[in-house]
Amino acid sequence: MTHSGLPEGLPEHRAILENTDWASLMAPQGSGGFLPEALTRLLDADPAVRAAAAEEALIGHQNTIYEATVPVARFVAAILDHPVVAAGEDDTAAEVGASRPPTRAVLLKWLDDTAFDADDETVACGNRACQGRYLDIHVDLKAFRDLRPRLFRAVRPFLDADDPAVCDAAVLAAIPLVEHPDLTGHHDELAARTRRLLATRTDRYMRDRALDALKSWGRDISALESPDDIEARETWARSRAARENPGDGEWDGYADDPPF
Image (cartoon, rainbow, N blue to C red):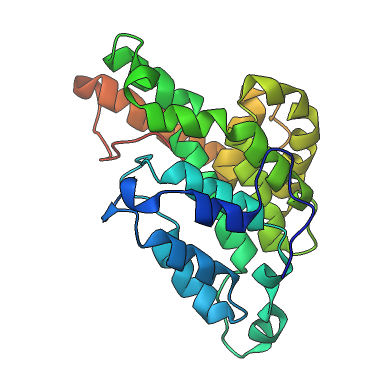
């Protein structure tokens, strides 16, 4: 099946599979030689096969960007709008007790997680530990960050997707991508979608990501915060103060800043 409508700068998915020396690239399991077969199964007509393929092909471990991460990201972006990605999912959703998320939402969630692991805060923290040379040392992470404009062009069509799971996943994936200097002009567009998410979702992780994004873009969030948001923010502030000043109070055990 041919696939058209690719975002500018992204090759057709089969070209990525055929022109990448996967076996020479490092992945969490070692060599990335297993990836062509696993990635191909992301386009299987059976949603269950695609779900199993995603577990294998969407690599990630301990917030690390690997050599194979960039070609996997290029492949994922190239198939986001492929019709087979949604094949059979209406039937699956009708099954009693079915809880498998749409394949497209899974792909977007992986792009989100990976972009979040390569965001500006990650680089700033790394630079403090590496005398400003973090990206010189972590070249694979830099390569992924350089890919962000192309990834955003693939994600953008789904910011208003009919499927709420896909729509939410696209908004959250776009947030770290638009940190790229070439994409700051999309903040207004994305802020509207982020406010929409806050109006309809109670999930703590989603809300923390959305509120943090709006604050980083200079938006006033006072009217958007729920009582639970305020409580979570105040709890985080207390735990951070306790970590930084152990003698001033009890530490709640969190090692990282939210969202967790």
